[in-house]
Length: 88
Image (cartoon, rainbow, N blue to C red; front, side, top):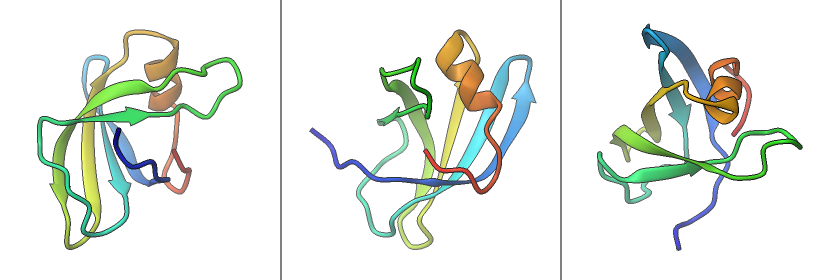
């Protein structure tokens, strides 16, 4: 099981039709590699299950992670409406 942490959204922007790029500030020096999945919790009482989203990039020195996801249901739709400064 992986480490749980809170990440702050730096940017969450459209990158195509129903595709979003979310840039996060996370703890520095974690061990992630592109292609691994982050189980993202959506802050909602109605959405209890985490969404597995592939890590696109991660810079351990700066603590910047990029996720790219497609809006396909309630969870990813809720993620697409989140803004900079919010936490997941």
